[in-house]
Amino acid sequence: MTGFEEVLALGDDALIAAQRLAQWSARAHEMEEDVALSNIALDQLGAARLLLTYAGELEGAGRDEDALAYLREDREFRNLLLAELPNGDFAVTIAKLLFLSAYQRDRYRQLAGGSDEQLAGIGGKAVKESTYHLEHAALWTLRLGDGTDESHARMQSAVDEIWPYTYEPFEDNDLRPGWLATVEPVLAEATLTRPADGGWAPGGGRAGRHTEHLSYLLAELQVLHRAHAGASW
Amino acid sequence: MSRAYQLAGQVVDPELRVVTIAELGILREVEVDGDRAVATITPTYSGCPAMDVIRTDVAAALRAAGWSDVEVVTRLHPAWTTDWIDSSGRAKLAAAGIAPPGPAGPVPLGLPGRRPSAPACPRCGAAGTEELSRFGSTACKSLWRCPACAEPFEHVKAF
Image 1 (cartoon, each protein chain N blue to C red):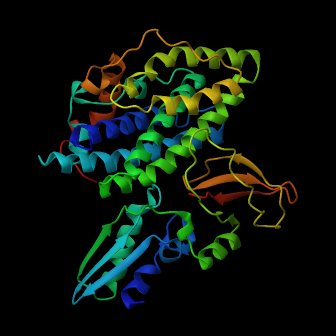
Image 2: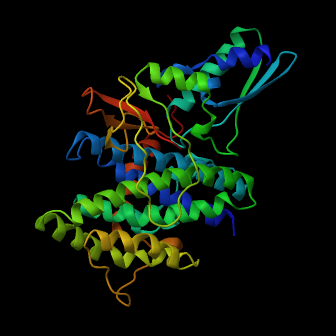
Image 3: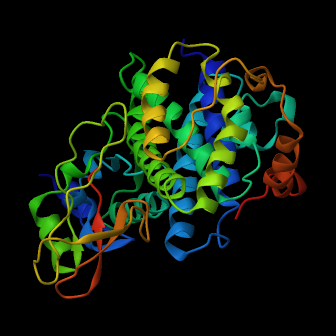
């Protein structure tokens, strides 16, 4: 279960989440939050670099982290749709972070306890980082959900909008019950309604079928490397 | 402790310039064989930009001491924890106005807990400090304030 494809998928989740979150840099509503979101993006980028480097080693075709990050087309990316969705308003960003970091924490914990020493090292570090991301998102979910009428309405709308994308992470594993046990109490305490199951549940990211949003994101992420191939500084 | 380890261990963290990488537990070992020296480091946070500077500084310190063939190897397992910061490093952090971390403990399961236990104010020693933000000027620090002396301060998060 720890082949190239799996490590690539987790690395792509982290890379795309990093690029999305970095779009908040210098744009958040207060200095502390700007710093927090940028730090979380940096953690994601760090995990992405380690995972993509190792994915390249597992593949054995000579691709390093840069080749995998900068020189693949959109259909070759294996990240979840949840990671690539636009930031929306701050509530949407927080809903995405809550759902993604709860998933990443549990995946990284699996890696940390696994037999592959390289992945155990990456997972052992990243699980601690994801826990801080999750706490940050949970605190904001409580503050917005159990806040003013306006913030409650926005947070509920964000949860409703993002919820359909929370089925895809669990298509190939049995981690959803644990994920629900993490997420549901946060929503309840935030006086938010947990959306019902059985609705729209888009997927396809793990097979390379993405929303149009990924292509724009990659254009920005890859343009410099492709315009100046092989450059270093 | 070897001379090579002592030399490399004196490299300071570029973002916490009061403490060395030996005190932080980042430098794991240095093996020497003739002209060759191999230093092993364990990164703190996955994306910490200080690690590249530390690699460069360690290599430069060993070369300056006469080893011509120097390599800096990264070891990820076991993962770094703030529990590896020694008592000297903790004292220096506190003296610089940065509250040192408490015990890291296991990563919590399920609902994220209502961490953290409040650190004592590194300036006046008062308890009852308040967290302003879980993320400070670097990924490893959070931002706090002390109601007693009214000063803000940073805290190296248990990790």
